[in-house]
Length: 418
Image (cartoon, rainbow, N blue to C red):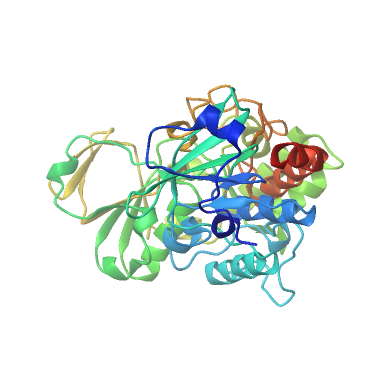
């Protein structure tokens, strides 16, 4: 049921209006169930779990489609880096004929089928500019702007933040950017290496995206260089045909994390050799320990390291400054480049619109409480998709949130709608 249409223009009960009415032309809509901010995989999973329990919800999405990060800001060759069984949303598996590592197009088709199966109909082109809890009436006031800057305020008892860890691009600032004279783009704008054929391209950032963009550039006969500023763990995507991630999950059931880390590092060294000789140093902590403590994900290699070994991809130190068609590095070297691609990731934008500081950190926009306790705040506030554990973590959050709201749904809606 499309609650945005059914409830549009519906006036609040008199006792609500007396408390929250304001002298504006803002359209106000009362939502009987939770408002979910974000129609990515996490928001869809939360809505599906709620619907399974008979709880309606309203999804607000600033873009014009579901999973806008995947649809609009990912490169063409992208595949899931983990096997599909670790990436499916709760309540609906991937089709059995999908490959182990679904393509971007297959994943989007799955999400579309997921939304259709659960009859999820987000309100698109609706940007949330503020959300605050009004203690006088005990409700959340969620203000939005539409395409024509029309204001709408959604009033609800429960607010689920599903904008995720990757809401806004992280673009570093360097001296000389204005002088460079060539293309400087974030990976959110990169589709393929077609536009960079025969060009010297500097890729800044050595996470999974940076490594894969370098590989893609090689396939289009570009000459990529990779900036490796910090230490990073590179693991094989598979070990003897078995997913490294899946194998790690299984081993952790039987062995302590440090022992599993040692095993992964041993296998990686046997397969790759010492990555330090190529300018890629490993952190002191093991890959699983580092992920658990900081959320930093190890790189799963799909062929990039082989290109580094053969010299098709050059590894560079951190950038000192940009010059005209050139880059100076901190080791004093200067090299000419035709383009720069920032593979510097994304960040949460929650603190820019959520007028609440106890649940989310103002430093990084993530829940202050560590996993698995960061999904619930106060006064009906929830978070889904901020676990730094991918889609598996989002599904865990979605189920917990639906169960928690379900406990009070009947009693609370009876009270507020009476």
